[in-house]
Image 1 (cartoon, rainbow, N blue to C red):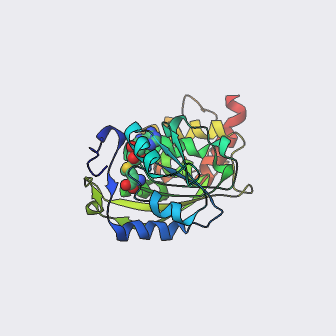
Image 2: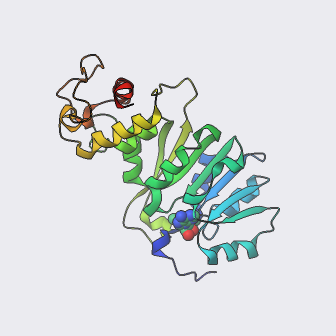
Image 3: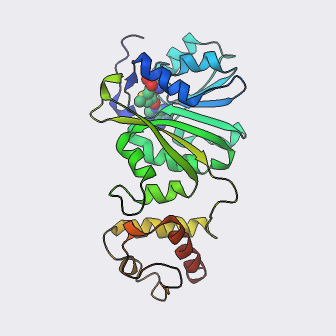
Length: 259
Ligand code: SAM
């Protein structure tokens, strides 16, 4: 399997830098009884040290050739292999206390982060390698250039910390961009929460459809009767200046009007 031709459509950039591999495994800090799930094991750069650290590991891989490679390399009691597109996998089947990890395919990073958000209640933590620029968006604060829908939605559900950057030379083939590793921990049940999560998601998506326009204008046909002062938002504010708490207040004010 030395010569697996990396498939661009599956976002395949394989880690080969042993130092980086160990840095990621150290950040995950796997324990024997962890319920660990790896997304996109590829040629097992992370899988190999992880199998040595935990009793049971589950991996989800879309590329059938790589699935066949993993089936040859590992015994079923060492590694449970799910041959599937992770975006179609129902994580409720795995129960709770999950630790999810992966050097993720960059072409599906946003849809995957949103897919996993549905299962946040079952998750202990997530450690992902992503494009650095995506992680910057995840952790951005109001007023930052990278602040957007991804920041608000993920921050409503997770506490996130960027751990370290990883240069392109750690991968084969080398990607054009710098990568980074992020740790995500779901917030507890007492988190600040919108009354209706679906309305909140709609409001945030609409707000950032025109991030530099005044929010009041972007939402004008939806919410002409919103009292901006009452929800604590400056009526001249643009989407990119409004905080998570303010989006939740706005969504709660809109919920009865949109019902
Ligand atoms: N973990 C390996 C490493 O670090 O070298 C491979 C990382 S590579 C960036 C991404 C991996 O995710 C590849 O093995 C690719 O085939 C797999 N992949 C891509 N899209 C996927 C999907 N939708 N579902 C599951 N796996 C996927």
